View (cartoon, rainbow, N blue to C red):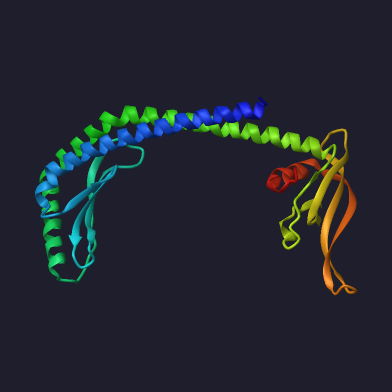
Length: 271
């Protein structure tokens, strides 16, 4: 196996581990949500009527009621248990959110009752709700933090391995540029897709079909180039445009610009 094949095999293995860890994280997050849902229902369950539902996320609780006019469960209000700032682990307040309206339909009038009942529960039990919320979050914090770190570490490792593959491929392409040269696929209807190169700060060569480094300076920071470019010229005898190829040489072009051109256009290189 080549080095790239070995690295790709390791990437696949690590990506499998990442998916397993993400699945485990989702299970733990669902268990946390279930615990929070049971807690919220204990306090707000009596505020709900008929087919009212609550939807719980990490910090929000959405109260939803079936709207027969639109045939779906409409969010009528939400509450959020929040810390003082993002730096704090523990929540210390409950915020409410609901829309205002001047409608007086039965749905909206009953929504007012729900908002009032939820507000009364918060007035009576705010400290207890916050304390239980913090206790539930704390019971899952260590496990979730551990899973998130393991996922982050593996994802970082995969990024590094992909970067290593790119470096190996780029080095191989640059070696080819300095020996045989490399060619790019030509779409004659879309010549603009071919790469450009700044051979000088005020001179850009466009529509490059082939690039070859013919020599390099002792420092290796610049080199002489042979470029084959493509252009559409009007042939008055045939009364049509024809594709014409030009070969020119350029001296002391910066190698980092050549490197960038090759790396950025790998997908259109002719094998």
